[in-house]
Length: 115
Image 1 (cartoon, rainbow, N blue to C red):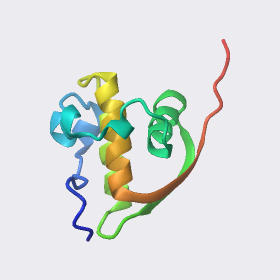
Image 2: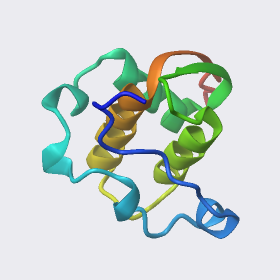
Image 3: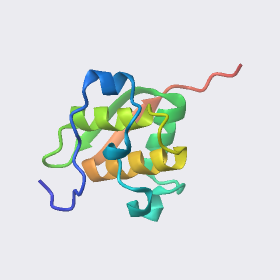
């Protein structure tokens, strides 16, 4: 496992995944997240934005050594679904953690539908 991974994916139980109320313990503090994950458009921020606003039709992640991809995606999805954090914190945390846990991501987001 890479020594630069400060945060590891946690196992998320079904109740927490279904009703993700308290997720502060799943995210790094906002002030510890590098600025390139705060509203800058890099591939990880774009991944979070597309996932949050459009949903993922399909995805393929390439996990870094020692990372369980299923557990990592559940962890990130739980953060995405929570009402607890400010959106800016949620966006930055998901993008940052994804960059720590995955070498790469390929995905297709759903098309936005007009009303």
